[in-house]
Length: 295
Figure (tube, rainbow, N blue to C red):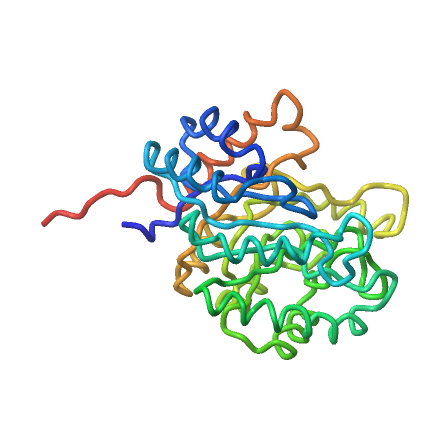
């Protein structure tokens, strides 16, 4: 039953063949391989061979390949980001995945509206390249500290921006890499949003949030006091059984991959403790293990 919604985690692409053997025994069923700004000196063909050997041995899948940078500017450390999108699109099939994800990029210091023409130019071309290879593209919904008016990394963090993006590039093979956390940080309720946008959700990151509504009501969102924290699933405000139900009702065929390294409590020496708790919690929310019906 390949569509039983595998639960996995994120792993740095350049480190994947070293890290995966150490953690796969905890029960991770998929891995999202990530790169920051560039695939660098990673030989993707060799990495794919090593990872696929591990996948056959341990029965996991590579859910997606990700490149997080700004492909719209090509400036500074983002000089190789666009080429990295192309590289991952071209090599995705070697990893057994049809999904490449990341930030849209944006024109630094400009409102989101100003980035749409450049987005259309860059991702119109990338979506065609991907379609020729049977690959889908999905955009992480993280604001990276940006707003509608200003930012350095990503425009895909608000549903109004999604409408503008998908109108600009009306391709069936571009969608969202969605997680509730990034919407909750903006005080958006993720559940009705997911119900509306589920058909465009190609990949889900397992990250939650805790909102301190008492702080919001007393100090607002521009004060000194923190009012929201990124959380590992199982420690935040979301009902993941609801999220999984909505995904299934809409025919979701992807995975949920835990994005760690953000929880204010389950970090450092407790990082994998938190991630394995999230793994077990998300498996519980999906209904546990497959139980065959009587014949």
